[in-house]
Amino acid sequence: MAGFDHDQHEELDHPAHGPDLPEGNDPITELSKKGYNYLKEGVLAEAQGAFLELLEMEPKNNYALVGLGDVSRKRGEFEKATGFYQECLRQHPNNNYALFGLADSYKALGLYHRALDIWEEYLKQDPENVTVLTRVADAYRKVRSFSHSKETYLKVLEKDGSNAYALIGLGHLFYDFKDYREALKSWEKMYSRNPEGADIRVLTSLGNCHRKLKSYADGIPYFAKVLEGHPDNFYALFGMADCYRGLNRSLESLDYWNRILQFDPQNKVILTRAGDALRSLERYAEAEASYKQALNIEFDLYAVLGLALVHKAQGHYAEALVSLQGILRNDANNPRIYQEMAECYLALNQKDEAVKILGVFQRRGIKNSQINELMNRLR
Image (cartoon, rainbow, N blue to C red):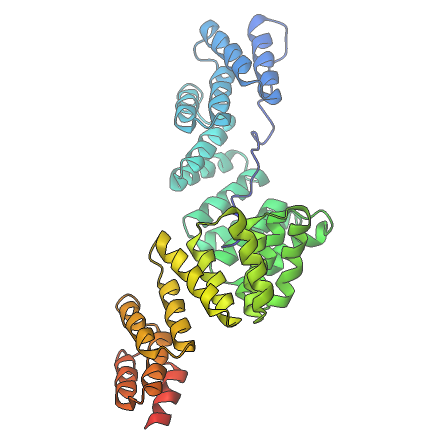
């Protein structure tokens, strides 16, 4: 969870913020100007009316077709928008505003390969356009083409070293491919531009990089900064709770899990995490209640594991084994389950069963130092 989805572009208009309108005072020119002025003001019904009137006067008018495409795109009617842009391109091939709008509509529909084809066509006319290049890089990121995406973001940064979209996009590219140190560098550049007024999405992304790198103490200030102005921000609350969890500070962690549960009481993941914190604090009855509440919502392997560990901590080893055997069928490669089972068998003076269950794991061909050490001790 990087903190936000990260198609970071705000709703930008065409690279030149609308076509260059014709000069003159004739009715067609006046309608074009009126339509685009309405569009810039966000008065979409009036803009649509002006463009439709223009289209009646001149059925192939490129300003009207692009304008109607823009109206539909701003309304979120992306399939409808593609029709207007495509019609414009049939009448006026290579119209760069229609190309831009068509590509953006395809992107919004999740048709990234089509969007890339159109943007590449656009770049033949305007190869230095930074707005389009960042969109191309974003689309390559969406289709998991790491090298093309990175190359395009870096091309943008060569032209504009502080370009926000490229820095954020590059950060997400590295994050998606689990190169958290490089992601951190990109977002730190964004943060350094305006530390006091940093976007909360950048702050949560910085915090999440530190979570992934297990530098939990360094992540906490970023999440805390978000919570100063947005006390109910889910990503920041989750990040704080998880950082304190990583630091083994269960009481602080529990506080933030509970703050999430105040507005999202049916979140089984958070209920399970709260149960883990309560178990660490040896508040076993509360932990058991939290795990059971999670399981009442939906099966959760970690909630069952948590319940088993509560039973184990309370000395109810046979009961713990029943739960552990149940989840082993769903997670047969998890070394933690085998280790906990072996410890339960040992507590019940069943050494042979402990050796047997550890041997089952070792025969799966997965290396785990803790399992190997326990097996060696038993032998």
